[in-house]
Length: 264
Length: 254
Image (cartoon, rainbow over all chains, first blue to last red; front, side, top):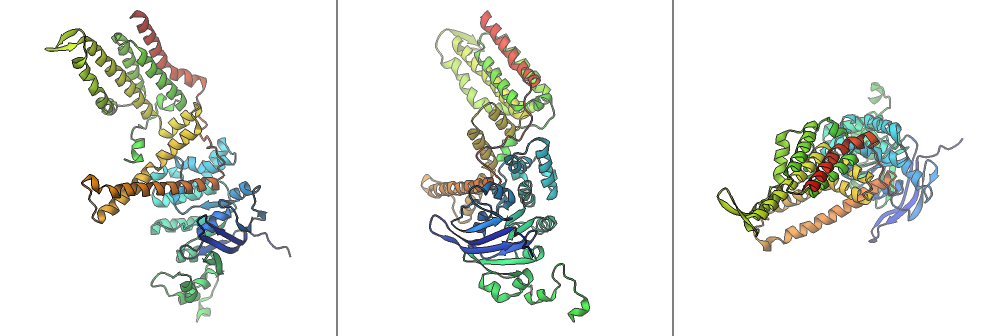
């Protein structure tokens, strides 16, 4: 049987910042095509640094990375950046052009698109996240939720194969968070979602990985990881107060069919 | 402070002046101001023609008199000086409203008043009919170095954010009992300016990362396809052309 080519395959990625601080210490990661995987972990675990590696913004110091079978090196970095869209933690870092539509057009224009084709690409991306009404507004005049969705649109406009989202639900109100969940669940690209929002991970991603100390230390079905209180506690994670993790296992996992009588 | 003000000068309308390509408007505004500047001050009739032409374009642009007048007040501090000239200048004295003033000084004051008002009104007209991103794009097409237009556009984009950050730092200081009144209490302000610089610098790095992530390779794409055609250049040239002819006639006759 032919093994499918994984969307993301990272092996032994290590990275230290110029001041000597070690951010990644041999991180391994495999994400299959069209999979939605949550990357959980405490602050300083190296999640964001790993994200910056996935489209070649930080240069590999050690280890290797392939996206859809294409190995990252100097010659492939442009194509890797097209394939992997990174949505940064702070949408204000992502939205730097004077208007939203220009910002969404920035990526595809760098890919060489222009004219009506470029306009179509922009409209398509804005519609995909449902913010087509804010095109000509300035980014600082948007609400937090709209800004987050617009930031996602700027990346979708490049038609990436893989979407990497860094803390997408941070700072959103429940309505904005719900809207974001609906949008992300509706996208058919491979997604790696970095988050501490465990219920968010549970709802969106069937599988999760836990990162700590610069490497991936655990992985499995999200529901199993979140039900394991000792595992979570070891990596400074915990479910919100009032939710009994043992109940999670009894709940049917998303997509699974369980007959009510099978529970008793 | 804040980038909200960046758009405060713009008036949303759909006039022919608004529709003109920005590069044509920028050149027209500069040419007009130049023609006004070289008009001899004695040719009062020429200034009347300049003024009328400018008012006509303002009317076509659909700007209200009150809007323009309110913004014209901005030049008051600059022309206040002009009102002093007739009193302090030397030379032949003339009687005016019961005061003895210098004839040369009167002409000097008139010169500053007329040219400054026309110049200010021109820039108000340009700003009211052209959004800032368009002005920057127009400047780019007029071969202003892209580095400069990119810096200006980033400045406009992040001004409000940085101002907001400063405001939050200020609030945080006030919340902990800091209420500066004297100069020797300024140290925390200076420190916060430094912190603000470092934060902005770090944001700059993150923005650059975000640009790289979307395929930036050193050149900002020009996203607007609307460029000035021959007819637009011709239309935009009407105002400065009239001014140049008037000015030339004034130079010849005086």
